[in-house]
Length: 101
Image 1: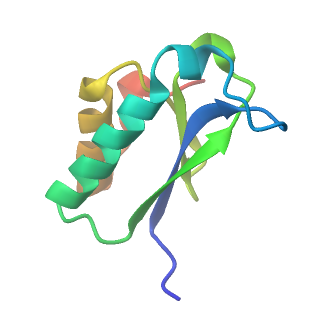
Image 2: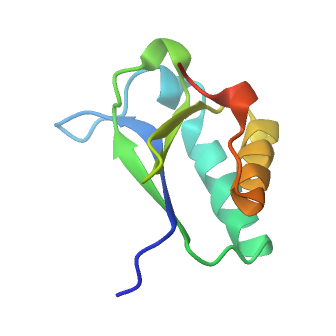
């Protein structure tokens, strides 16, 4: 198994019972996830994987995404944020304007 250089976890607002609730879901994180997956494929970004998660407990900042193993938490309000984050990954940098601190 090849380990990805970047594993992007997108909050899907899933709760333990499987229901989607919360800010990330209400702000359409699933559409952002779909766009993210398409961009990774279009850019042929080998070594970048995506997964959807349960609630990450930073709802007021949502939608959110974590880049593992860097540990960077990103606020992902729209497709422009995804583009900036993927550009940063391609350039070996961080999308500072979307970092959660």
